[in-house]
Image (cartoon, rainbow, N blue to C red):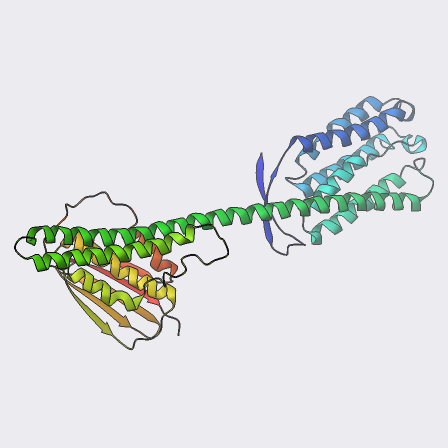
Length: 405
């Protein structure tokens, strides 16, 4: 049995959510408290209420098992326990079932009350648990004072009730605080694991961008170089140079990215490999794609200015993913345009093509899942948005990324 209990932790000063379960220890604690009250009552019950001690014992024993659910509904359980004790004193220690009960005296149950008080302190905010607990302690003192033969003076009754109730409340508050701290730490651990999973997804996106772009370009140049190796050795050699360059750059980017996964040894991951590519590297990216036979035009509008690393990197990946898809699915002969628009508070990146080329690779409905969907996640992390779709026989990718002033 589980349930959520949300409260403001008086120590941590924040909303904390804990999962409270009815454990074997809860049942055992309730059983011990009930057995203590019942045994103390039964020691003197036959002499105190000889005519009704059996129904009194049954009433006392069966009415307190609600304590099992004290951590689930602490205030309700305390109210039920106090009502139960009040009815017990009223009915059997001076009520209609034993009119002379006050004369002979008797045992007023208090162990179950203290257990319920501890549960209130453990599960209810201080601003409510303190007044509720004080009211319960005063009611218990009044019930005990109504049986004259239990103690000698009312002052002693009040002192004993306040002391016992204070100890029970303190114990409950300490255990509740410890449980909430443990719950908060477990929640932080869950958040850390979720962050790790998110970062792994980001790394998978990076790997896809790097590998897909580099492999596509190298395959196209390898195929083109093979066709002209005998008729145009210079062009074939140029294709091999491009393959070498793209492969080297991809290897460097992979090494830098995988450096994040290396164990921390006091040195920064990826030292010496340079920063992640940004908007300033788009020109080189366009040149590489042009050598694969795609006619790419780079258009820049507005006043360029310095960008944050995340914004520049996201813009670069938009262009890279879009050009990779054009190279893969539209092929050589396609006319593409990369338009970068500098606006007052945002950066616009639009990559479009006319679909006029011949796709060099067979189309497939099966994708890795890290292409445009991963691109959307990357742009969203940077605070922007991206859309894509068919347009005038071709395809367009349109991204808007906010730029800090």
